[in-house]
Length: 144
Image (tube, rainbow, N blue to C red; front, side, top):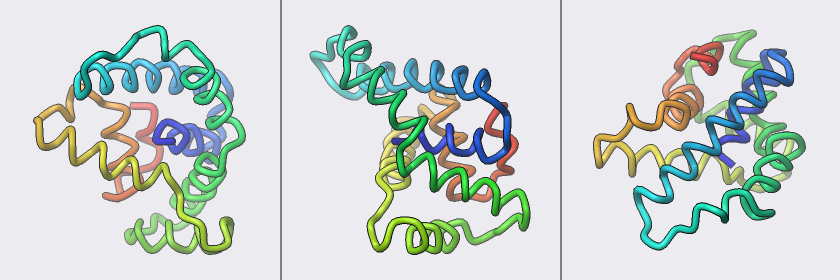
């Protein structure tokens, strides 16, 4: 769900399929690294099964996290909104009829876990997605 936010940012900036594919590749690598860093007994092959790669592709192309993040990116590009939290609430209200996004919640939890272990630099995509989503980092830095 976190990577889907990044995919939505890419779509909102109209950066194209190759950029989204590159983001998904890095996202999959970071997901695998996160799981092996924080959990024992992780089977690397799991990430290439339906619950891994197939779910990532589906979420990054059609999921609500991607759709909402695309709108977030477009609104950020237009107005450079400072209050990211308020913007996410508006998007959830408009697009999800009261449901909550899982990607934003997961991004916050992962960021806090990485920060507590001083691993933000080891997970640059996860860190960048969080900083864009919640700290006002410029949206076009999704490709940095």
